[in-house]
Length: 249
Image 1 (cartoon, rainbow, N blue to C red):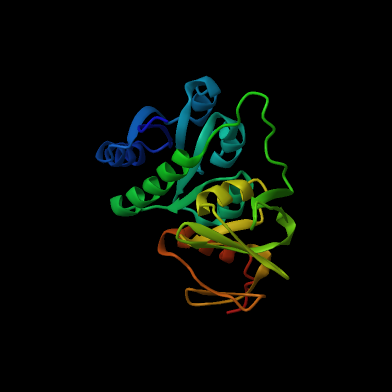
Image 2: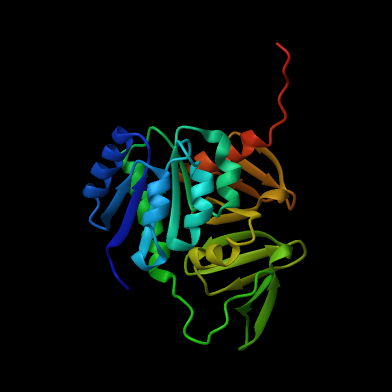
């Protein structure tokens, strides 16, 4: 597994490209492959053969939006990161399986934390070998006790909690602990679209949220989850999109 991650920046504003270029140069784990100010040019010049690890992508751009572009690029990069000044597109980013949604202006320390998390997930990610069947979309098996295998239906999952070298998967009626990492489970759930990582130790099913008070998320199963700092932008944008607002003054 290579240690240097090849990345591409797509933003119609040159100053935004320049800032990210400086940030990339500060991180030894990143290598800048190309930059594009034109999303249409990026679409024409990026292929799966480029073996790109990360695309950093703006949303509001001329010709084609970043969301539309992401749909075409999603299978040409391992990770897709939206970096934008607009929070209202978080749900659209969720739909195209964006890995992160960062709001401008971005500080280097926050950018570095995100890259470290991405790099970690790429290290544990392994492509299927030739002839190997990919995981089905609606279930997977985990190792149980006494050499047993337990089937987990994704639709039954409420919460995943990280516990050092183990994770616990909570369903509505049961919980299962097994030897996996949070990143491995996150990758297994990402295609489903109903889950969001809200803390380094928690992945939740969004429809199980009962209420939010400050930075505490209360689930229907009475679990209380603290929203992690590096996950606030996407979660708060999601929350804003689904909040009913009055037009009265």
